[in-house]
Length: 368
Image (cartoon, rainbow, N blue to C red; front, side, top):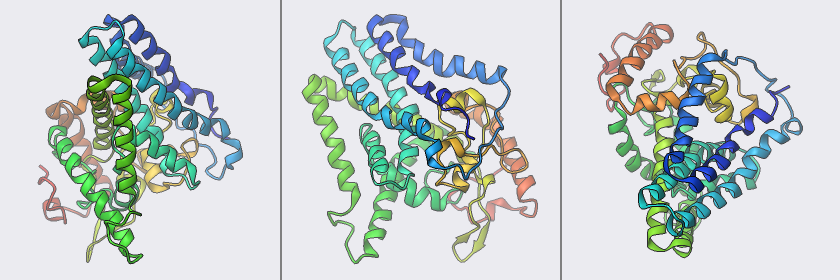
């Protein structure tokens, strides 16, 4: 049976903490960062790794309460964002405190909301992917759904995937690159899907238009709730959320490359093409997102059924995502921690490849 559902409801603890921080203001506004980056990391370091695995054939009927947490978060986030926006503009907070409040709401809508949307868009029901869209357009990033499903999962760990961080590529270069390349990649992928049906990319059936309309609706709602200042703070919240998403994307595949087979083809995706982390508490907070190696190997598995991969199957991150995102903000330190691990990964899984600079990776920096 899968792990009990209750620990995976840990993300919901951010909502009352954000409410308390917004009510009290001042130093309380730093409590969310101390909780997610500090306490979670400390607990990860003192508790043993979680390497238990549920039977991947477990039926959905045994996962109701696991799924429920992803279903109730979207309306909770809607209330949190727009009540928080009203409070930031019309409440007693000073401007600096209002900005800080929307920043910590952005942390929640990014680290939790976009993560939940990622789980939802992978499901085969009709309504769960739309619920995932709802969360993504609330942070003005609806194209992520198309890019992630049609491009990232197909081309991960190859130069054709904008989201795979190149070896030696610092986050300060990665972030602006993916902000530009992801929407273009999503548009082209949806255009190719429509072309197979004999339709142009500009067809009204292109879901990119739906993402844009939903995002504009949220901007209008922000204006109705709190005027132009509310729109600015809403966009800032979305930026913080997107920043957290792309930090996670950066970490998940940094420096990893699939074997090139020639004629534009690559080997099938395997567990060792994603970084894995079995840290217990951060995996509860992030609903097993850190079991990313198994997610890319079997994308249709719901999060309670994702398998913990060991060193023989997948490269291991030294820390959970909360601390890894902090390291990502300092490229020299991140490279010092991760580059030796990338080189060890190459020796372990591809000992026959000696010249990586010539390995169908023209867009990758030449490794040292």
